[in-house]
Amino acid sequence: MQLIQWPFFTNIIIKRAFFLAAKPHESLPSAQPAHGATTIYSLVQALYKPSKSLIKRYQQNKARIMYKLCLNSRDELLIIDLEKIAFFQANGNYTHMNYIMGETHLLTVGLSKVEEYIRMTWPKDKPSPFVRLGRSLIINQSYLSEISILKQKIILSDCGEHSYSLLVPKPLLKDYKQKINEFYIKRYTTDI
Image (cartoon, rainbow, N blue to C red):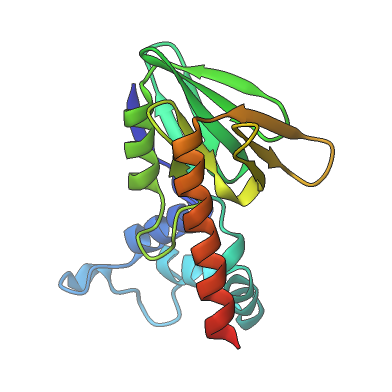
């Protein structure tokens, strides 16, 4: 299985590459157009010059960037939208991937490799919502809705019609619950 970095703004990257390729080279005198002539460079520059409204919309929607992981094997290419993943669960040398909407896939890599791919894909300046619980589970904390130590389970839900109940050992749940509790206490005491 091979990791391919998925470009978030593919069309912008392609447009920028075309823009750079079409730019006339300054050191070649023949590349300069005659007076009044139109070059590919000027056409591309006019077509793809971002407007103020486009820049403003981009800045407002920075938080909405989708994080995707692209896994390539001999027989298939799988593009994974990480924000919609509920959890990854180990199954020997394979990993079960479950979307919050119910769709599942069997990945031909182990959980440690999946964890490494997530770490490589997620931006360094933003905290990842994925946390590893023991040897066999990685959950997306964005969907965390309940931790029950007595029942030894964790519930991931989209606050709608989809939810998963996962069995987790008691010591792991106690530690995880304490860390979550400390995070929220620290967060709300610094806001006050």
